Figure 1 (cartoon, one colour):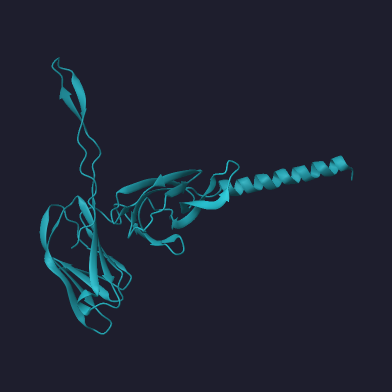
Figure 2 (cartoon, one colour; figure 1 turned 120 degrees about the vertical axis):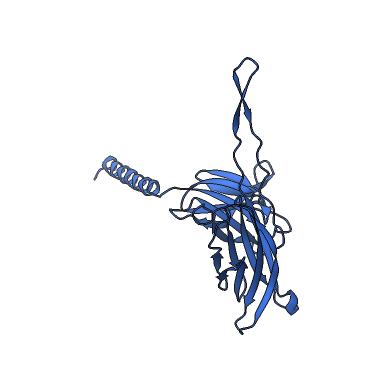
Length: 271
């Protein structure tokens, strides 16, 4: 075979391989989802974070235990959160080279449209663990409560006599939806593996159809029995979009006026 025929065959083969690789890449199903980011507890030196969305990096800065930071995502089924890192190497101008390294990943299912992502930083390893919750209206509507059990025991919550239970490391949702402002009795208790039951909270709470609550049951080792279990709550309030109100002008014409926006989502409040 002559050199030119060999070169032609190699080039054709290369283009076929390139076309095959591009076809495989284009066959990757793209996902569209809304992410609500929050620190469970912020690291001592919070890193600069960005979400890799398709070919762009979208910077964001999570709040602590408040799901007020929302990032729209469109990309592959595994979303990647990146952390800005200054390397020990210098570029040609003598400046440190900036790297964006993986910080955590978020799996996005074909039916996921709205996910709450809690970040648990691991400062020694320079990464974060995540806990992800489906915040779609179907899975977690406004006007209800979801119990998240981080303990080794079973946890039960009773709201006006209606009880729901989350197993260890599990999640359970209040079976009802509040359609109006309601003042209810609230009780939370744990049932340990020994059979012992312990009442954690007994109080009165106000529930609204425009808010939803994530209740957390926590357990600390090496403390007194009275301090072993704690509770936290994240309240997510519904925020309406601005409404355009038509106000008649002095000449009888209408002048559009923007309505006010509701207050932003409330931050965590102890039960």
